[in-house]
Amino acid sequence: MKKNFIAIGTICCIGLTGIAYADSMPYEPVFENVPITESMTTAIKEQPTQSTMTAVPKISATQTATPAANTVANTVENGNLQSALMQLDSAQVEIRNQLIQYKNDYAQIDAQYKTIKEQRSAKAKQVKETEKKIKSLDDTKEKIRKNLN
Image (cartoon, one colour):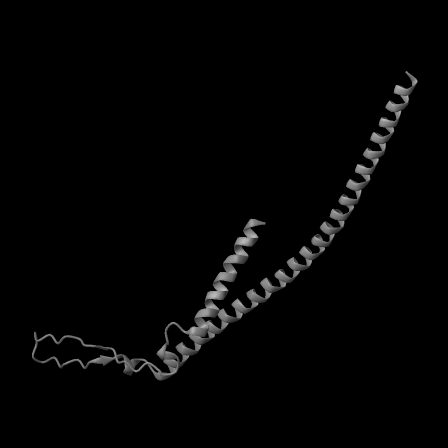
């Protein structure tokens, strides 16, 4: 039972922090709206050992990576984020359903508790009244015995 509460609490905390960060956006990722245009260049050093070799041209990342690849990467990343949000939403719905169930169970137990509490107080009154009757009868018997002697 404790493990269930711990798991539910953990899921709630994760879900609530995810929702809080989604609303306030702690950082604004630039790559979602604008494709990355940084060019990463790597140069191969020319080796002047032989004079017949030609220089190797510089290779840049923009030449090798196509804009379609960046779009696909962004789409996959957005899809992963959407999937994570959907999982959090479904977890939140499940937890809310559990909360409703727990509240219903609590209301039933509370109603039973009130009923039992009323029955208990009624029985306590009956016990006190019966004890008073017994004590009254004992006192009456003692008075009669004293009168006989």
